[in-house]
Image 1: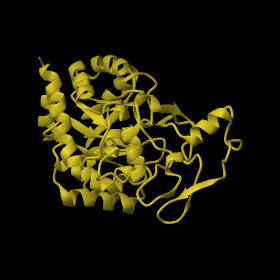
Image 2: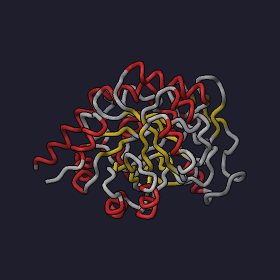
Image 3: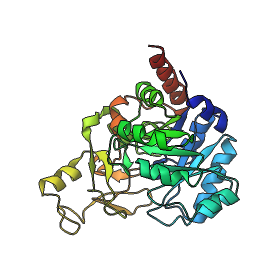
Amino acid sequence: MHRPYISFLARFELEYPIVQAPTGSISGPELASAVSCAGAMGAMALSWADPDTAADQVRAVKAFTSRPFLVNYALAFPPRSLNAALEAGAPLVTFSWGDPSNYVAAVRSFGARMGIQVTNAEGARRAVQHAPDFLICQGVEAGGHVQATRRLCQVLEEVLPFAAGIPVVAAGGIGDGAAMASALDMGAAAVMLGTRFVATRESRAHPEYKRLLTQAESADTSLTVCFDGGWPYAAHRVLRNTTLEAWEAAGCPPVGQRPGEDEAIGAAADGHAILRYEDTAPRAGFEGDIAAMCCYAGTSCGAINDIPSATDLVPRLWAECLHRFAK
């Protein structure tokens, strides 16, 4: 059987066709470098980073490993640190939530590679015109801010014929070897996992957030617009909690009318208050009602029952996938 992942491994000098999703402030250099050192592709989200911070984080990963990693920009926001990240040596940039046309030349001028997230055939057709090194095909099962509106299997089946030979990375609801095998069997060249890597030792997530992921089932997540924070109207998948329940019980009222809207439910490590409905995921050092905060989670949380190191997790996932292939 033809396995597109074999050429993907060779193209990016990887040991495993596994890509870590750039899960906002949770995926720092510690996690990205650990994933890359393990033979997969690590990732960091730099959409909200200032140029100095972005450059420092890129250099931090490069100090740990010469293996490839990616930085992501959600184009719902101006990518102000893109040039700084490229100048620091970011080897690969991915774009989501927008049209990357204005930024392709900058990426190429630094010799970096590029990936573009898509959620339907038309998006794939448009993305291919930029000659990306791969496409990221996202399904609605994904955690965090979700660009997709349909299940991964539907989107992947639709996108693959339009990829024109460009590798397609499947994302959304993938958290174990069985889900990986299903996506690769459909023709994906690699798989992207986010929630699974949030629940690792190297992740910057708060310990309670990680613990909640190990106890959750797929049905414990919801796609909502409850935690709008600084990104209004962007749907996101989170663990259901008291904040979401109270908002739904009140009839899902708009901003300004939500129950407990101005209530501080905790504080960040630097002491600034975390208000209810903020889109900030709880990180290490946060205090307060962690479970009531915005705990992003994909449907893959049902497959998570431990908090390993990324170093151990990457080969374990691939072993599970190979076992499924052998059946």
